[in-house]
Amino acid sequence: MRPLLRSIMNLLFNNFGYKLLAILLAVVVWAIIQGEQIQEVNREILVEIHVAPEYGVRGDLLRIKAATIRGPQAWLLEVPKRLTAEVFVPAGKIGEHRVRLSKDDVKNLNERLELIIYEPNLVLYVDKLMERSVPIKETLHGAPAEGFTVERVTIEPKNVVVKGIRKDVMDLRTIYTEPVDVTNLQQSKMQDVRLISPGLGSDALSIESAKVQLQVGNSKINKRFSNIPVEVIGAQRRTKITPQFVSILVQGVPNVLNNLQRSDFKAFIEVRSLGPGRYEEDIKVKIPAETVLIETFPEKGNVTILGD
Image (tube, rainbow, N blue to C red):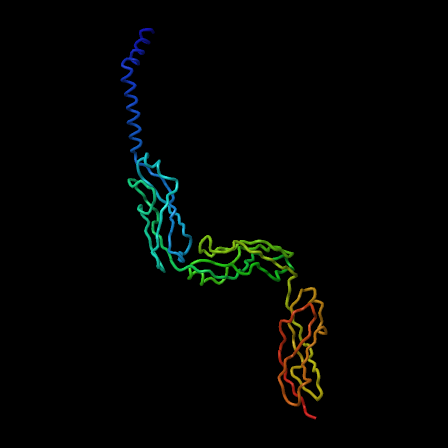
């Protein structure tokens, strides 16, 4: 065993300095080869769009593009986590402006690296900026509980100031709220509701939300009452009228309408100031206080006032 051990030790330590140097050289060569090996990394490019004062573009002034960078591993280590690029729109430009991003637009990138930008084309619509007040409209989702209805919706504020390019702002008619759920609602409520962006940029709206107040009441139905006699009011001479009966359509809550009779309604024609002759006059009606008049049919009557 000892001769064998002695042979192994001689093999290991004979010319030890040269052997150590060879190992170090191998490590250096391996590091150089690894550093020169071509690799790829994926990055995002934050594109900053610059326009002249008082001008803007449709959408945000910051856009994000995906890209792949190829090159030696050692150089890739110097690439920041997010790259930036700049695009300048010529002053006075209005309408569509097309830009193709390239490596020259990207800041602080080693020129020896290869850059592949996915979807490099930018189509920008440029116009003058303006502000305009636009009404806010609620969006309701669902239905109240049976027997209930949303009688009134109040929004505060009623309008929102919208900022953006002139064409898009002028085309706006309404800014809508996010859906307000009224499913099985039985009582009035008020809540803050976010506004839906019109797609003109992150800072297009002067406020992000509005207060929406829902007034809930009993659901109402319509009911028609027929054969209501038409009376003559203020007649001093013999008077004939047609028609002699009308029908009245009213609205109210079911428990009120179902308890009403024809005798609760009154239809009449006022002839107090009329002299002999033939006239067409409005048929007026009186209805119970808890109901709303929807329709009187017919609305007018023919009046004949005879002479003495």
